[in-house]
Length: 197
Image (cartoon, rainbow, N blue to C red; front, top):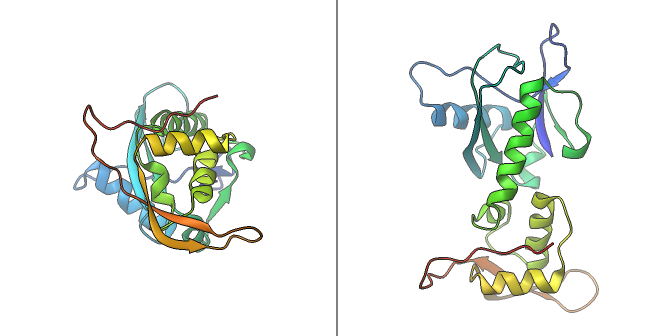
C-alpha cells in the first residue's frame, strides 16, 4: 500500500504523494522525517533516501529537482492515518502527477533491488515472528510468491535470524517457532538472502 494525500482543488490529479519544499534551516533528512511523522501521525520504522529526479516531468510544486524517500510503517500502525491521507494499493493507484509516478516506480525498484542485502523486511515485523510471517513480508515487498523451502534454506544460509524458545499456534496444525532478527558476523562479509525466480 502507498499513502497518498488529497491534492489541492486546482491540481489535475485528485491524489499525490506527500511532499514539502525543503526549509532553509532543515536538512533534507530532517524534512523527510518531519513530513513522514506529520502525514502518518507517528514515526515510521524506517526512512531512507531512495533516489533523486530532475527530469522534465511535472511535479505539483513545479520543482526542477525532487528527492524521493522511502518510509515504512507496519500494518497495525497504519490504521491510525486519518484526514486528507488515504492508503492505496500499489497495483491499483489513481492517476498521479507524472514525476511522482516515476518517483514511486523508482522507489519500488530501489526497494526490491536492495531487499536481498538490507534488513528492510525486519522493520515491518514485531521483535519475534514466525518464518511464515517473514516470508509474507518478503513476498509483499517483492510483489511475487516465493517457494517456501527455498526461502527458508536461503534465510538460514544468510544467518539473519535465530530461533527463540517461544512457539505460537497459527490455526490448525502444530505451533510455529518464533524467531528474531539476529545477523551473525561471518568471515568474508555478510551474505544476503538470495531470491530465486
